[in-house]
Image (cartoon, rainbow, N blue to C red; front, side, top):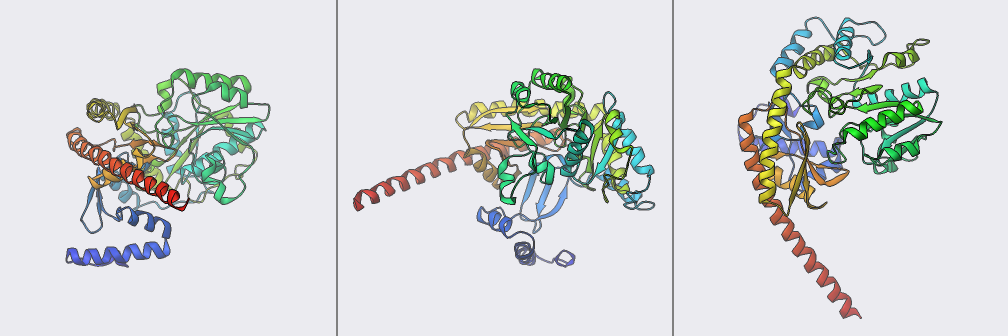
Length: 446
C-alpha cells in the first residue's frame, strides 16, 4: 500500500522509507534489514533507468556496476523491451506449459540458432538454479551415471541439485547435501581427470566464475576439459548465466576458448530485467531422454509466453555485431583507465581480471573487497565483492552504458579507493590498539 501513496515532500518520503524498512524487516528478511542498516547502506530501490537506480526517497543515486550478475545487461527499464512486453499483453499471457506454444517455439529456434554445433533444443525455466538442476537431470538420464564434478568456489544457484554443486557454506545450514557431487580446483584439468570415474555423468563449470573472483581460464584448460569429457564419456555443462549474452564481448563466453559444450545454461540477462526466464540448451542426442515420456520434466512458469517475447528481443540486441563491438570498445577504455588507477593506488589495487565487460578488480587482501564495496556505495557506485574471494570486487557495468559515462565512473571509483585506503588504515590502527589493550589486560591479571 505504501507505493501507491502520493509524496509531497522529502520529509514524507523519508517517513515512508522508514515504514518500508520496518515492513521489510518484519515480513521479508530481518537479517538483510539489520545488515544494510548496520553499514549505512539502507538503500530501497525507487526510480531506476538505464545505468542508474535511485533510493526511493530520492536522496541517493547509484551507477550500477553490479547488474544482478547480468540481469540488467541492457540497463534498467530498457524502452525497447518495455514496448515488446506492453504489446505482448494485447494477445499473450503466461501460457500453459503442458501445451505447445508458438512463442516458446520461436524463442527456442532463435536461441539454438545462435549456438554452435547441434545444440538444437532449449528447455525453458524461470531461474538459473532450475536450469542447472535440469542440466544435471539430463546428464544423469543420458549417461545412466550419477556423479557431477564442479569447481571449488563456483556458484550455480540455490535450488536443490544446483546447491549441491556449490561450496559447503551455502549447503551446511540446510542439512545433508544431495549425494553424488564432488568439487575440484578451477583451472586444474588433472583434478578433473582424477575425479572422473565410471560413475561420473558430467562436469559443470562457469565459463568465467564470477563468485570465485572473475577467474578467466586459459584456452588450454577449457580444451583439456573438453578432451577429458570426450574420452571418459562425460557431459560438459557450461554455465553461461552470468557470462552469456555479450558480457564478455562475444555472445557466449565459451566462444573465446574454441570449445563446444554439450549443455549450455542461460539465464539472468535473458529476462531483459523485466520477465524472469532461463534456458537449458541441449545437444540434439541429449533431448532423447524426453522421448519416452515428455512430461517427466515440467515447469509451470518456465518459458512463459510473455517472457519469450522479451527474450527474443534480448537475443536480437545482444547478438548484433555493433552491440558486441560497443562492449569491447567500452571494455578496452575501462581497462586502460583502471590500469592508471592501479599505478596510483599500487598498494591497494593490484590488478584487473577481465574478458570484455566481465571485470574484477583485484585488491590487496580479503578486507579490501568489503571496504571498497562500502566506500563505492558512499561515492555513488553499486558494486560488490566476490563472495568466494573477497580480494576481488566485481565490476559489471551495463553493456549499454554510454562511453561518455566512463570518466564519471572512474572519478567516483578513484575517490572510493582513496576512502577505502583511509578506512583500512583506521581499522588497522584500531585493531592494533585493541590488541595492545588486550595484552595489557592479560599482563595485569597475571
